[in-house]
Image 1 (cartoon, each protein chain N blue to C red):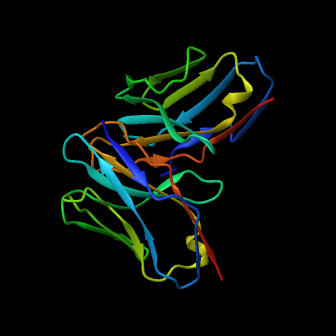
Image 2 (cartoon, each protein chain N blue to C red):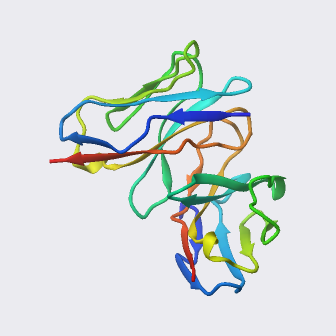
Length: 111
Length: 114
């Protein structure tokens, strides 16, 4: 089955710092890869996705590249803002299989 | 597009009572998922439906939990009898057909069982 490993949080950064949140996955088949973000009191929402090897997903300054050889999909942002404080979830999905989420990584950005 | 609608937003009940959580998916979406989120266990998939048919309920904790999807626009998750360890935020999500389509989540129901 599918599984995902994310770096432990919380990740604490100052505003304008560089962000990396690591994600590695295992999947039977060729997954699509997703990053979701959860703001306090809300459900998860899609941040970005990539559907094939070497694709780069990007949104709101965040980026992640689909690395098939290392089965990774690390999330990066060059300059974080206080408003980026949230919990970030990595998730692979193969076909119409159930979507399994990692444990989530809490990001705290201070001014 | 109203998004996925869940009700109630908050539910407080006493141990032993029946609890019913409701979800209205986005119109036209073929798949519906129920997740539970706690600090200890993170986000757990309980059950999901494709075209109103339950596909995988292996995440349902025990027989006290049941889920139905009588039509394409409505689903319920029922806990009977409820226990304090069921306290969590329950999310419903839907998505259209296809692996590349993202899930759309509701804002969740926060359940507290005392």
